[in-house]
Image (cartoon, rainbow, N blue to C red):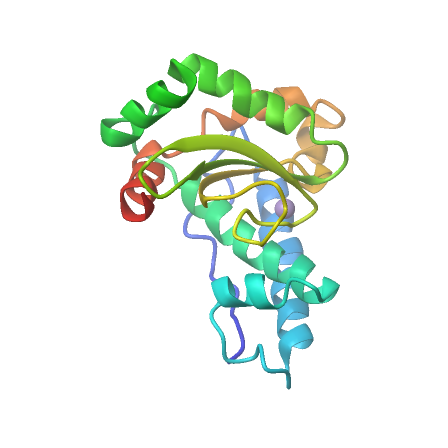
Length: 201
Ligand code: MN
């Protein structure tokens, strides 16, 4: 069954001034749409066709069009969701405890996550992942790789992802990736991240 691009669940300008409307529109309607269409083309008529996206990320890992576009499809679904306007602007509950246990404080987590995003050379993502038992850690991946993929040196279940491809910020921030990363912390909906933590710990 073909995957479909869900509409952005809020207005393109909902994350202004941190992420501008034009960037959101192109990012969703062009980039995410292309990953979705290319994923469908890559799995059509193969034994991956009727699997879930999570299964495809593992079983289709060795096929580059599946890996790249399956990752792009999955990663952006998470990205739009964790930036949903509203919610808490800091972690709460059991996720807050887990972040303090792994990093010492929320500020230290922000430092680690920022470093993961700024030091990712070229295109990729920074992640906060939860492992079975509840421990959280930060890592980054190249291109559209997903922590769920096997053997990429970044594991666990992703509960927060930050896109650091230039298409995520270039119109507004140009080469200033650190400024985009700083602004990104203003649009994270920690209630949703916390729900993902509780569901996957
Ligand atoms: Mn992107």
